[in-house]
Image (cartoon, rainbow, N blue to C red; front, side, top):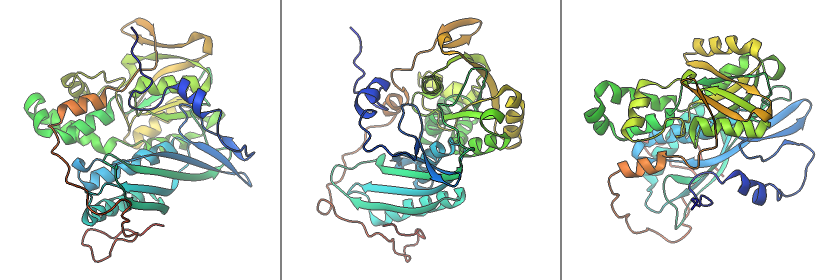
Length: 384
């Protein structure tokens, strides 16, 4: 009996997207150069005069247990990373905060100050949004966010632009996000089971859980025929899921050398401890990119100069070859993972949560749009 994955956690299946979402996209507009596609991180809109807008939307993912600074940094970088894989610098953020009643104004002030700081560090302006408390809202999915980048028509890339002959480059290695989150959430357990050096190294990976720097560094070499042809971050379902999405979006085959993909000692140890396959687990911070072969060496060198480890891990082939992985001299077909093992492992590792406090205020109680400047932890701007 086959497992029903039609309602599994995470992204909907490609078939569901194709049957339900793709045929119903509202009005057709000629300026939409790249619209919704499964495995493609965002849209490209022609603004005229040789300029385009890259736009992407993601959940605004906030984990209070990380502390507001880390939680906000990660929430911002998740959506900014998708925008950066277009090759264009993220410039504007719109964010919808649907808050649980249990979140106080002081909590909001702490979170918002950290969001403001993360956006300022990236050079992104917060331009609009919505903030309210509603029944039924809960962490970590606190709403949604959209990031916009602007640039020249001939400077963007998408995961659908890889072509046979390109080489595959992978930054940082597998299981970056999984290792970093387990490292900061369970430091005592990892210290006891794996030792202090491994636990500290795992926690340090938290601040590597972004591909903004990776993507913007790589495209300095050039794009399309002169360099980078496609980029994608290895979020849900990890490296293998991301590579399958590139292959499907571009209509190409792929041969991947598993042993050429970095697997840091701390990532290996953490994944073994929690019984997780490091190649199919969430890995925000890992950039998957394809490039023309004559630029691959320069791309890896540029990344190294930016202190980003990267390896050449395969090649793009004609579609009839399929997606193949070589491990220890043996080759096998690569299928998209059914689901990401991170969240089940994370939930098993967490102690039982206490009962939430009763809701305060009525449904739709609106949070003040501008946090008081007198609050000691807030200097952010209000939003409409």
